[in-house]
Amino acid sequence: MPEPLSVLITGASAGIGAATARAFAAAGDRVVLAARSADALAALADEINGAHGGGTATSLALDVTDADAHQRAVADLEIDVAVLNAGLAKGLRPVWENTPAEVDAMVDTNVKGVLNGVRAVVPGMLERGRGHVIPIGSTAAHAVYGGGVVYCATKHAVLAIANGLKIDLHGTPLRVTTVSPGLVETDFSLVRFDGDADRAASVYSDTVALTPGDVADAVVYCAHAPGHVNVQELLLTPRVQSGYTMIARGEAADHVEGR
Ligand code: NAP
Image (cartoon, rainbow, N blue to C red; front, side, top):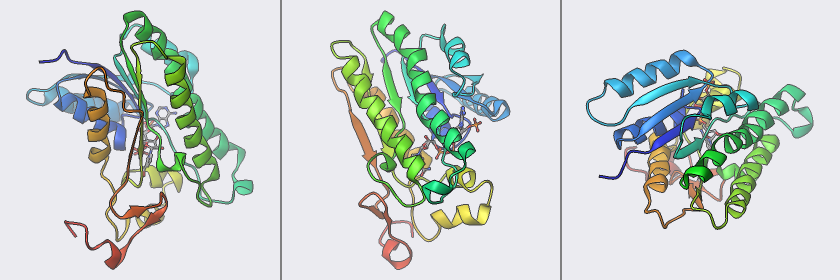
């Protein structure tokens, strides 16, 4: 049996991050759950620690936009794998209509949050001679769509940071992988539309999105790949999604099993 990995997951209180924590724990790894919602993290840690078999969980209240807090929280943890997943979109409007607060939220969380994570974990990984950084990108790292300019710009930045980090780490044992999902059914749209549940539901209506568990499986695959393998990027979409932004709905999505 391989030694369990110590896995930091930011944005672990919901969606892809929570599913990724469950998937690593099911594989026997030790997960450190980080996000701002301490109660949700505690509940997930209890669930994982109460499960028969599998790995263990601890939780860490952390706002990834706070560089110093990120540094302090992670300093002594000896993280093997850092899944830098915390992220959000705010609004779906032409770029000149984005408020400064929306721009700050997306840039601070998605871009600076990933840089804060890299700064917090990489020096320790280099000292220990092992480590894997896995930022969560998006199909929005490869294409732009109207109304999502700032979000897409942040995800282009995430992919650039990850690709550049791999180059900066050239000749070291560390690995860097971007996992870039297409449409995943989570609270992402609820956050984007400020709690408008009907509008959020319409994003996933009459089609078959990825589940958070689908993305979690992809992340675990990359982290558990043999040590000589580096998955540079894993781009996955639901079968109904084509060309990054086209989503088949209704009858056009009916060929997917389970509908
Ligand atoms: P979600 O269900 O809304 O989860 C987002 C997570 O990020 C939550 O746990 C949230 O926790 C955390 N978070 C937000 N701001 C944070 C901050 N400042 N500090 C720490 N944690 C923070 O959305 P999701 O779909 O799982 O999104 C996860 C990642 O996948 C994001 O990077 C997103 O861009 C990416 N993604 C999503 C999709 C999709 O279709 N859903 C597609 C491609 C990529 P707290 O609020 O408790 O802090």
